[in-house]
Length: 96
Image 1 (spheres, rainbow, N blue to C red):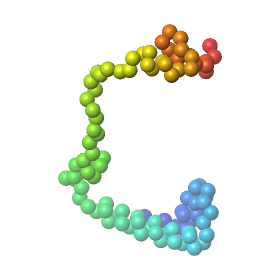
Image 2 (cartoon, rainbow, N blue to C red; image 1 turned 120 degrees about the vertical axis):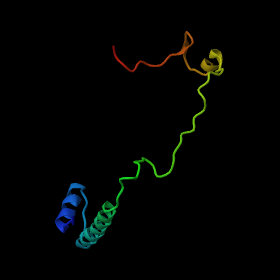
Image 3 (tube, one colour; image 1 turned 90 degrees about the horizontal axis):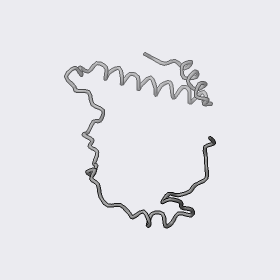
Image 4 (cartoon, rainbow, N blue to C red; image 1 turned 30 degrees about the vertical axis):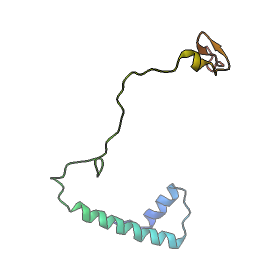
């Protein structure tokens, strides 16, 4: 599959890009070379290759979810500008 100069102009128009004539020619060549490389890759037999989402193993590091002591309520609400019944009082943002 080869892209034409008109294809490049169409994509540039949709992307709201202004390209000079020289840029259009350059991009046409670059993209066509990329497509040729992808066509070569399509010739490879990958039937024995297991699908992966990453090329290297990726592991998340999580700490154990264990209960532990938290700050006392009095200490937490001590910095609140307005407190009522151990809760912060904030302006209403939703009308009922």
